Image (cartoon, rainbow, N blue to C red; front, side, top):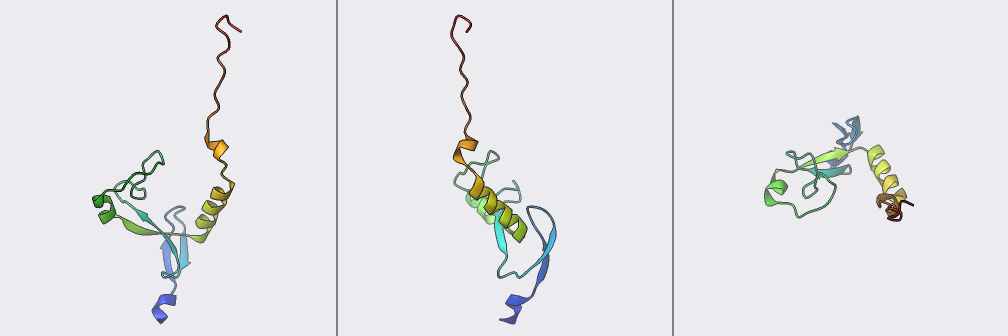
Length: 96
């Protein structure tokens, strides 16, 4: 039980900074080393069903508390209308 509270030094996958953490409590993200993305995520940011091969080769990467907090703040402040594109009026055929 005492081994669960030993502090370890590692790198944050997001910001690449070195930080100390307790392995039992650190936030991790599963990454496919071939793509550098979570399994099932495309380069456009959309989701798809991950392949069995992608899941098998995926590894757990640590994320520092600063990056976790930044991600939470971003998710809370993101507005659906900010991600939509406005349409432009073409005007009338006679040039107005």
